[in-house]
Image: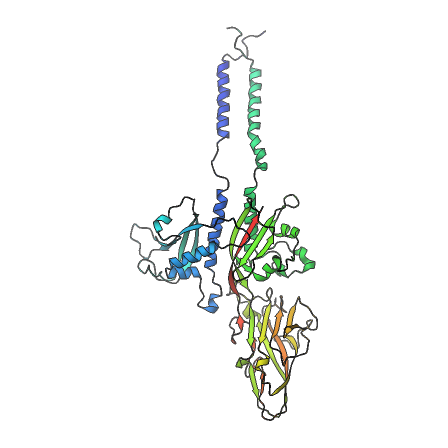
Length: 187
Length: 370
């Protein structure tokens, strides 16, 4: 015989409680982060390519101490402010391929800047200055805009004095290390 | 109060636990399915890993390097890397490249299975990968290529920019007067005790201030010397015969020649050609009409692991002249410390201007995995 002992008086309340629990569990359990699965791989490939290109441009073909005149191409480009030569050399390098693959997308755009330490920064200014060095198209503003996400590769380059078009007091004339930053994207 | 709309607590508690358990199980189902997802990401990772091993690693064993292992000791090779050393990522060694890729006739030193185990690191036999590894070196007529043709469908891919360290060599032109000596003892008809010496000072060669990518390392790289225009510098009206008796190795400070298989025909340790014909180092050749003498010593060179050794390679020459009072007895002299001192110093300073020092050539390596 059913009596009042150990009974639930409001079944609705209990059912509602269970329902809320289930809902909360489902909502928490099904949170989705929307990331296209392989975007990071394309990024990784481009980043690797860019950093390889900078490293190879910074490696002279013969021992510099023996030959004296043979220096890293990267160093020469920055010292002489040869942004156009850098563009030709860099694009030529990163688009090189073997004959084995024919389907690779090889249209790569870039924008490069040089970061340096200011000689006499104003009191409330940053110590680090930068200037635009080179880009894949002539118009520096349009080349900054890209639809594809860009990756960033950098390399520290030792130069022997101020770059040609950025003399003191802009850039120190002593031997120094500047940071070359290249933004790369498939265009 | 009546009995309607009532539920036993036991039933409710049981039902709740059941429901929670059911939800948990349903939630786990996608996790079980993860292993069945598309393998695209995996292929890119394998391609990346393969390229890193090839481009940034010298392979194992590294000292002596794996490319010196012969057919019978292939099993000792654990990893196939192409880099010159740990310190030179992206700078590849030409001798490793030639060992790794099939040669021009398509024959390979390694089997497909060995490539899978030592560079692709496939989970054999469960997950064999198909692959294509290609290397293009600027100036080379053909690409190096290994594996199957790249398919039209999707595959894992990576491209690495590299430089290739080209081998060093010495090229001696006999017409250069620094190698010549004149004798004024006009009654003599022979010079039997002259020789050409190649000096390899390992202390100079292993100079630590020179990076691995530019260093001449006799432990891993061959020494190559070519002597050109030998016959054209001879005064044919006066010389009746010239012999290259033998080639011998000496170590500075040690008397007598180094024990070596001079009389063995052994392409593994040396290549010696007189006028294009392969000879042993013991062969007594008449070189009156010979233009080119070629000597290549394959690594490791004698005593290459003793960094303070000075190795001397001596080519003994014998000249005979016609019995003519007005002749000039002109002969090659490369004796160390001789008056002309036409010794070939195989080093970076290169006092006689004969060296082609190691240089780097641009290249690109592509790895496709599917």
